[in-house]
Length: 433
Image 1 (spheres, rainbow, N blue to C red):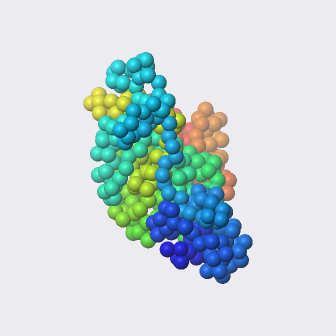
Image 2 (cartoon, one colour; image 1 turned 90 degrees about the vertical axis):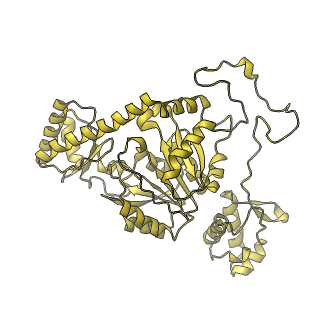
Image 3 (cartoon, rainbow, N blue to C red; image 1 turned 180 degrees about the vertical axis):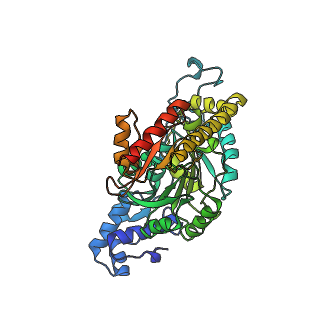
């Protein structure tokens, strides 16, 4: 349906084609109009059409075959090394080593995994599907495993965006998300966060700015600790209903440690989404594994960046993760950890309240404390007393240096006496300003 292509500049024309491809209006293999025909159709200069096609080619949306024309790319995988599936022929071209000559960790693997095999362990996939499906409105989902949440977000954005595309990020924001967007060459558009999550006006601002993806945190938002409320999630779903092809990435990093049920902003008709659940907070950062539940289109693009034998997540690690996720002993320890973080944060928040400092005791790893004065000055005073804290400015997307008043404090590992000392030192640091 190439007659739906529109725009007067190269960027507008390329964006129009990308949108039509996203929506399935232009199917893989569709031949785009010749440059001269497109220029005549849109009433633009031929060079403008040439530039638009060049942008599409650079973005991997189309392939030019010279005089044979320009076609929309499909999602077919590139040839992969390893076993060939779906053939009755005896495979003598796999390039695999002999499984019998590879030592295996007997307690985790009954046999070594070879090149060309599925990248996700079957048992882990089944468990992950049962874990994620109840929390997503869309019923048709695919499961992928990545090397942690940051790896997942980086790959998801790379599969959906090109350089200079806009991405909506919470403001203040998780540092790793800020760095990922910067390194990818994307433009960060801030979405304000209040006590209920992303604000409706913040989301609308990002959508009006043309973001093609947004990254959100449904529970224990880092750095504020805020968890999305049901009413706020409903508001945001209603807004996103008009933008079903914007990729929504929910980074549910606190998952098993959170006492609240997750509130998703992904509606039942949303077309591009990913729920990312890393195990780092409750099984340890060195596990380096995240479960990613997505729509089928997003999964196909993500899978292309997880080639067997090069960037897959080790099946040994996958099986170790599953053994922990299903172990009663490990589950009990995770439950104890959730209670510990909540109790220690609540204890410290009470100490601050007694000293006239407002700090909500949210279920998160850290506390987000409003000092009411310059956070930079407070942190400098704390350093004199032997404490190192982070200021609001470090997590801000677009803000004048030194303008923030919040500090992020991680206090769950402090003994009672140390918590009291920090509360006293914080109060002194604030009153000295």
